[in-house]
Image 1 (cartoon, rainbow, N blue to C red):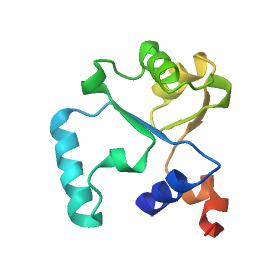
Image 2: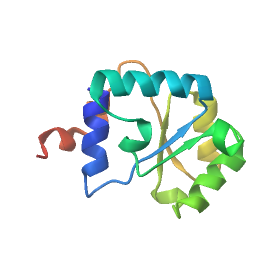
Image 3: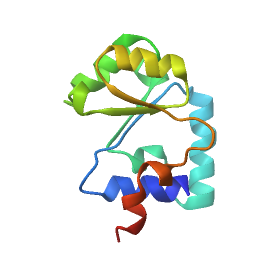
Image 4: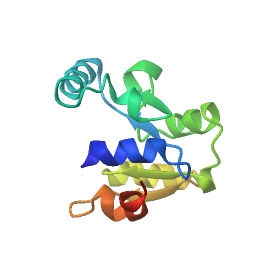
Length: 121
């Protein structure tokens, strides 16, 4: 369901999607293999306009500098950007920079967040 929704959001004219991950190189290799084997997707980079991996840019959430870097690099306005994360610490840090935030907790699904994308086809 998550992969399908990410594909729909990526192709939607309404949204621009980005990934900001605190993953490390070993984990990235592991889930890239899983994506390729299970979904024929070469990597998470294929599901987003741009993917930012902490181990590649040498910054980590919740440090403010990583959010500033993404905003500047992708030319995003904080007030027009929605940051979704499961870590309250990351949410609070992004919110302090003026970024719109949503704390992704148990029970919330991507389908709940973007119901219009389920019917758009």
